[in-house]
Length: 453
Ligand code: SF4
Image (tube, rainbow, N blue to C red):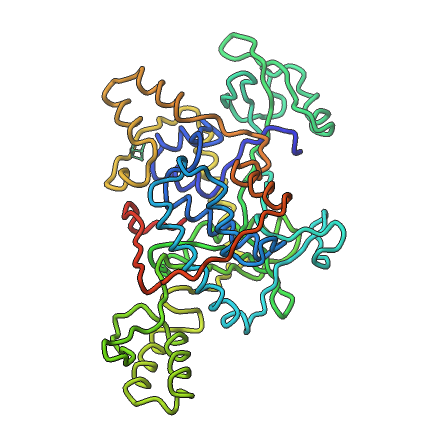
């Protein structure tokens, strides 16, 4: 199957489909299949990718021994002149966030004892680092949606859905034979009075799970990391990525999935409590600190919390009220489950959207909103289309975009290849992370008020 072209839909495609048909038409694997050339220039996506890599390494082979070192390796893997604007500030922010994560995670994981699952080639659990075992991080899945389409073999344009016995199709019985041989089936089709070379391709639901974990009771969970300006829990009951991944994971791994751990890291820095000019600890409720950090500071200063003056106990209680078993204002995780009916509904939603996506008569109209300015990398092309600057449109798309590989294995990003080289060559990443977090107050460019990466 890996050698075959993949026409896919992903949760992000479905969201773009609902957000703006014009944008979807450029990006979807079922249509234009375009992706940006070169390094990601959206600082939020670049940063999200850096945090994900740090977690991926730390909770799998742990080549770097510290997620901050993995994060630094990611940063070093880019030529300085290709980094997006704001990458240096984002580096400091990432180191600060991961420093706090290292403190947060063992405290909150005590109750769950989540461990990364290691799987063999048949997706069966096995002992970490044993022969053939792979850590279940960055788990890519392709669920065959049992719909095939006829595609122009030259332009890769979808002509129509494949129905067995279509009188226009020549050599149709060859299809399964080719599939079994793991080859791209190619034959011809009568389309608008012309015989054209075609291939018949299945449509897959595709996604990548950040991590699969097993808890102390042996239950399997999907664990996903989000970096965002602020944690948001209102959307979790209706979040379509959670529903789709829970639906897909059971099919892909052939194992019940107990739930989804939605881990949100706020792009902010948890600091030790401030000190007043007098040297006393501040009890300012607006300061960016946590119950744990204040508690530690009181123990250092007074020997125990009980020995601290009452105003500090009150401050500590105030902070405790702000925190829940799920986390604090900097990091929290939520545990979400979907029942059988919800998973069945998810499948129906996916198939319903797919039917609309495959409608060749669908007019791909734009949906301009105030969000276009930050959520659409193709805004300048969109404007040029409606201005009638057609040659400019073609030029921009040609210069800035390229076709996304249909046989990609997901591990071919240039930065990833450079990191693999670093690991092979045994490059040492210094742990010079004693940044003065009290002295920095980083806010990434505010082009994105609510979006998560
Ligand atoms: S700029 Fe807005 S309307 Fe135009 S393609 Fe992008 S999202 Fe759609």
